[in-house]
Length: 120
Length: 120
Image 1: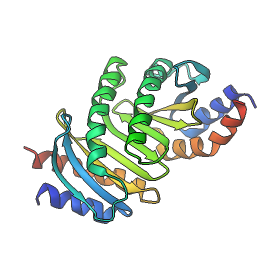
Image 2: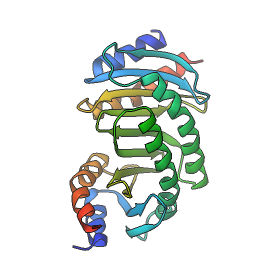
Image 3: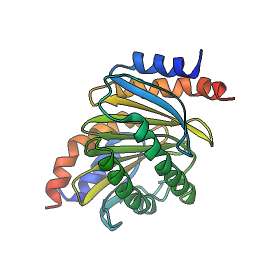
């Protein structure tokens, strides 16, 4: 299955999914699947998060509190889940506020190895 | 109940709690409860996160994707939950990797108004 198909399957099955993007820390998207009805600009968001993630990883390293695996940022308009794939790439999935947060985390965790494989 | 007692009650009841800190975005802690056996430096972490949170709030604002309510950063050593209390303060709760993440999010959400009241 192509990376885009994997992303599509996650977004369509999670419940309340708006889109997902695989991106490098340099802010360049590798692949994405975004529903036309998405209410936030997911690609722009992912680009902004790429810079922030670098900061977060650095901070966590300085604090010696482990390797970052997952970050989520929830607002009153959206739930954004970020899963680190490796030292170069991460995947962002955006859900509506009432989307299935638990299932989103689960899907990202179990699909990360396959996404990783697809990036080789 | 004092702020510290509220934090203590949350940390002791969540399952796998290591500590919690109420902090301003200036990195000054208002109150905290940290278990002696905590394996990460929660206060130092909260200080580092204060600066990062400012960045994250600014980014979210620029993207017009709503008001930040909750952030979590999970590593292979700890789960860190951050709940925004108001424009000045946030609360950080750190759990062990195997701690009860869902209950942590729930407790922070339901206790935030009382913490807010305690800060007036």
